Image (cartoon, rainbow, N blue to C red; front, side, top):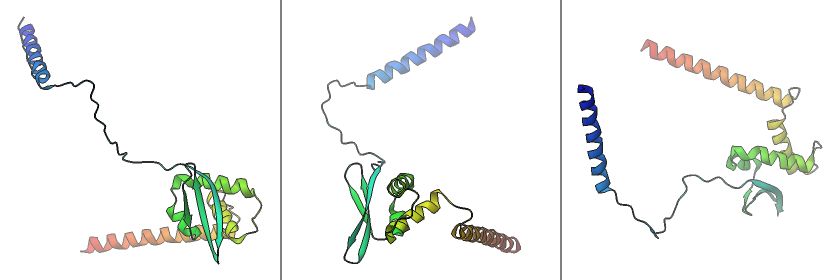
Length: 157
């Protein structure tokens, strides 16, 4: 019996709180105000094509997106720095579709084709790939050694 009274008290408090909240709640219907929505993040449209533009002694890599926008890069390294990681496989598919497994004749096309081929289809027999692995393992060993010497310095202090 005593428990029923306590639960009744709780229900009464909840009803009072709900009634209090409803007093402050105002619902407006047919609100015609426009709200400017600014997205927090937007994804660029996918890359649908690329071109190599040769102007005077300069070559530019131009990426063309699905919405018609494009961006030029003067060097392959600039292209790789300025592109979203998620777009790399798409660009590799476009390059591979254009050239297949045959090595392009144009030197700038060959640079692009070669860089993407090393990224996406590494050949473990390739000297470049082996050298890169050596550099990476040396860098990792150096990093571990540097961390160990810093820990040693901190322990002796």
